Structure formats: C-alpha cells, structure tokens
Image 1 (cartoon, helix red, strand yellow):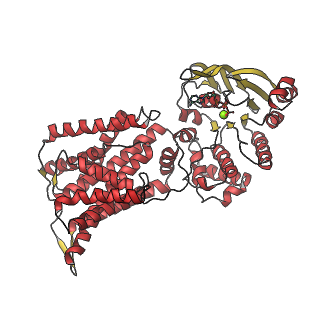
Image 2: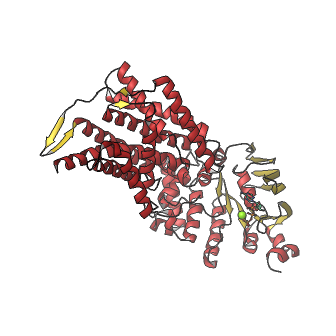
Image 3: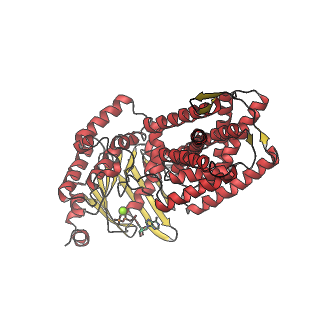
Amino acid sequence: MLKIQNLSVNYGYIAAVKNISLEVNEGEIVTLIGGNGAGKTTTLMAISGLVPKASGTITFKGVNITKMSPDKIVKMGICHVPEGRRIFPSLTVYENLMAGTIGNPSLKKPQIKQLLEKNYELFPRLRERMKQSGGSLSGGEQQMLAIARGLMMDPDIIMLDEPSLGLAPIIVEEIFDLILKIRNAGKTVLLIEQNASMALSIADRGYVIETGNVVLEGKGRELLANPDVRKAYLGG
Amino acid sequence: MEYLLNQIVNGISQGAIYALMAIGYSVVVGVTGLITFTHGEVIMIGAFASFYIFQYIGNNLILGIIASFIASWILGMFIYYVCYDRFFEAPSHISLICTIGASMLIRNLAQIYFGPNQKPMLNIIDNKVYRIGVLQVSLMQIVILITVVVLASILAFFINNTRWGIMLRAVSQDKKAAYLMGINVRKTAMIGNCIGCGLAGIAGLLISIYYQTLQATMGGSLGMKAFSSSVLGGLTDTRYSALGGLAIGLIENLGITISTASFRDIFAFGFLITVLIIRPEGFASRKGAKSQ
Ligand SMILES: Nc1ncnc2c1ncn2[C@@H]1O[C@H](COP(=O)(O)OP(=O)(O)OP(=O)(O)O)[C@@H](O)[C@H]1O
Ligand SMILES: [Mg+2]
C-alpha cells in the first residue's frame, strides 16, 4: 500500500536518512523503532512531503507521491499524527476535530457527524471538553485529540509518531489498545515508538532504524525475540 | 466641555478607521506569521482606487468600497508572492526587509503615476450634521462607523463560524500541522493576507473621505498607525487590535484639544510607547501557548 524505496533526506550537510526502503501492506500495523536521532520522524516527514528528499521514491496505492505537495498527500488518504501532537492551541477541541476533516474533501455532512460521534465514543474526554481551547488540555488529552483529529479525515493509513510520549503507563496501555482498535476498524497503521516492547508486541512487522539506516526488519514477534534488539532497545 | 464631547465623537470615528486598518494588519500578520511594512501602501492604493472610481464612474460609495477592496487585494497578492511566499522557512527579518523594499517601490511608483501632490477627494457623502443635545455627529461619521462595524462583523463571522475560518486560524497557529490537515497552506495564507489588505484598502478610502484629501505618500504615517494599533492589541488578535485603533483615534483627538492639530502623531505614538512600557504584551492576554 505504502512503499518507500531508497529514501534519503539531508538537513544541510547532515544525512538524517540514508537510503531507507520499507513497505506497509494494507491492514498491517508496522512499527519503526530506533534510538533518538535515528531518523524515524524524518522518514515520516518525508512521506508527508514536509522535508525535501535528496533521493528515493514513495508510492501510495500505486501512485507516485514523491513530488506531491503536502496537502495533496494528505488528500490521498495518508494521515500523519506528528511528534509532539501539534494540535491548534487556540482552536477549540471541536474546531480541532473539524480541522481534521479538511483533509478528506469527499466527506459529506452526515459522515462528518458520524465520525465525530465515533471519536467522542472512543475518547469520551473530548466530548466533555468540546468547547475548551486545545491548548488548555493536559498532555494526554492533547495526544488523544491529535489522534482523534487524524481519524476525523477517515484516512486509509494513519502514521503515528510516538503517540505514547510523556504519558502515564495506564494511558499508554489505552493508546495501544486504541491502535489495535483502529486497525480492526480497517485502517493501516505505521507506528513510531520508543516503547519498543509494546510496539513490537502489537505490530505485524517492524523495522529497526539506526543512524538513518534500516538495520533489521522482521515480524513483530521475531524482533521481540531477537537478542540484538533485546539488548539495544528492551534492556537486555 | 462641548468641544471635548465633540472631540470624543471625532475620536471614535477616526478611531474606527484606524481600527479597520489594524484589523487588516492583524489578519495579515496572523496568517503569514510575518511583520509587514507595506500596509500603508496598501491603504494608499485603496484610497486611490476609489478616487479614480468617483472621478470617472460616479459618486457611488459601494462601488468605491468594492474598487478599493479589489485594488488592495491585487496589491496584496503582489506583496504575498514577492515578500512572503518563499520566505516562510527563512529567518523572519528577510521578509521584513523585503516588505520595506516593496513599500518604497510602491510608494515611489505611486508618486510617479498619481503625482506627488495632495489631491482633493470628492465629497461623496452629504455634508449633513445631526445634533443630539450638544453633540454634533455628521452623516459622514455615521457612514464610517456603520461601514467599519459591518465589515468587522462579516470578518468575525467568517473567521469564527466557517470552515474557511478554521483553515485560516489553523494556518496562523501552526503551518506544518495545517499542512498535515490537508490544508493548502500557501493558498490559504495568500487569501488571508489579501483579505487583510482588502480591509486596509477600504480603510484608506474612508480616511481620505474623512480628511477629504489623499496623497501618494499618505501610507507612511497611516501604516505606522495601523502597526501601532495592532501592537497595542498584541499583533494578531483582531478584536484587541480594533480596540487599539479606537484608543489611538481617541487619544489623538483628545490630545489636540489641549494643543494643536500638528501634535496629533505625538499623542498617538506617545500613547503607544507608554502602553508598551507598562504592558509590553499590549491589551491582549495570551491564551494557550503559541507554537512556532
Ligand atoms: N530541522 C532539522 N535540522 C537539522 N537537523 C535535523 C533537523 N531535524 C532533525 N535533524 C537531525 O536529523 C537526525 C534524525 O532526526 P529525527 O527527528 O528524524 O530522529 P528520530 O528518530 O525521530 O528521533 P527521536 O526518537 O528522538 O524523535 C538527527 O540527528 C537530528 O539531529
Ligand atoms: Mg522523532
């Protein structure tokens, strides 16, 4: 469904991503794991067209999106929930959710209503705080809003960049449950996580990235059992 | 006392025009995230557009307003492509200097094509004056107030209640996140910028009707007043910027009651400096953190 071939990204003279290739099939949960500065966020930004690519091709549902503008890429059905949430602080929760629907022009009013209802069911907190400004939510609530906002565009694939960052363990579990729910609702998920054990335990497949290179790939469970991965990311 | 009351009326009318300029300014700065020094020239173009409409087509205020809006919209597009479009990622002083250059260019071209001298604005509104007790209110002042209130309300409705408004606010709060919502950020920023310019152009029409003159160099001090009003309002908040404009109009007109009309600008900018010393963030109180 999403295919990345030989992607490289440079920031000035820093090579952040070097010749990465990866693939996400429909209905899968695929995770990218790796240490700080490995190039995970950069890879997602390159898919979304937010950073210029030095080389490589990206195709989505058979269409070459390498040179598309970021807003068109979203409209292809690719949702990117960015690192650090980036909700709109002075829009209300409701308006933040409505902003999400802009990414899918085919949505009609009744569908938007349905999506809204679905998201409020998934995140009852957001319904309570509908009229509150996004910036006044707690970190965890903001993360939920960021995910809900992404789901509002009813995308085919959702890319989540460290959704559990800075959240209490109990909320982290909720988020992972949610990712499974999203997949079971028919979506494809590309997940970036520092929490490698949890990510690998729910993922169908995973890629391990180090200093801009894919160093390992395999089934989630295989990677979880791999001694090198255990040593580097799971604390032995 | 009577003089003072009437100066308050004058101050409110003039302040309403400054408020419209400032609203335009804060829309531009909000949506582009960059400071502009071309606003005065946009105001001037708006004034000249309606001047020529009145001269060649007829004394129709609505037609004048439309012409001012369109002319300054087009100038806004020019400014957007020259000064902003390629510089969103660059350090912000680059586009700032670019707007200073563009403003000089536009002002000098205007002096060449419109002539350097003051021109009399046609008197398109009846010279009627209404008396309410000791208060004197001219028809022109009423027309000005109504125009500003109507335009500000349309803008507020548009920004607060439509999908378009959500896009505009999303772009002004976080451009990267706005891209990830599928918003065409460049197009939205361009249109937002042009809306702000269009409103400023209409303000240019109103101020030249009010003073009954216009001039190619009028943008200099008017642009500064729009900027000051907007700074008083915390730069990007349209409501507080409007309040800033109103305050400057009032202070100016009250100030000249105790001195002479040539001291007008001293009161305006003196007030700005005083407020900023006491309250550097302006009238507005910041809600929620502004990300990038
Ligand atoms: N805007 C930028 N300018 C210059 N260098 C950058 C920029 N953004 C990222 N980098 C560099 O690119 C490399 C990859 O960064 P990236 O954010 O992709 O890492 P990451 O894998 O997401 O890390 P983390 O897990 O800490 O989020 C890092 O070395 C980083 O310093
Ligand atoms: Mg990252």
